Length: 283
Image (cartoon, rainbow, N blue to C red; front, side, top):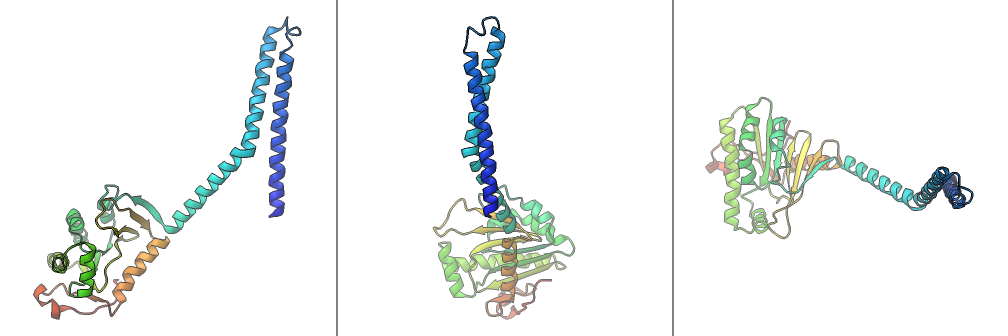
């Protein structure tokens, strides 16, 4: 490392010395051009020498300034950019949208190319309505899988926490979650050949996750309550964020004490007797 630094210092010193010599040569040419008696018969050449001298002075001064200040700052900026790029690649971040509802998130394209879709959320009616056509088209295709993870409406502690987050009563929160369950139950009845799983968990999601094969969309919740613009991250398979997302989804479905899979073929009135535990990873 010392040898490398010594070499860098020698290169910088050499560059600065050359720049100073150029500036000095320009200064001498300017002095020569200033001798009017000498150039009386050669005014055109005098003008040329004067222009050349001033150019060399400016070039030399700029070179010295670049070597002393500009080059180092530029190098630091390049290294910072490279470091940031490596961090983004390692994380697998493809895009950061200004909000969950942003048009920058192409839900149509995500659904169109997907064969496996995982959703961890509170049942967002806005998202379901916005993507109702996309969900139906997904289920119409062969060999597609849809896995839904939502809070358990029968777990009072979870519903109490969820209701407080969205500033609504526990009863309203339970009703909201049950509507989401019925939404996917109806789709399961309409598309009996489609592979749909709904998992209820005794946990309140800390983020919402939407996984489409090799791409995942993660949106946050505000601790301050309702905020119009909450950044949303879109990441790809191979990155650290995607690995975390997949581990969370699969891990929740294996959490025997906290998660249950609903039998969507039975009537919602019989849900107390219809739950069956199935903790195998969605294949």
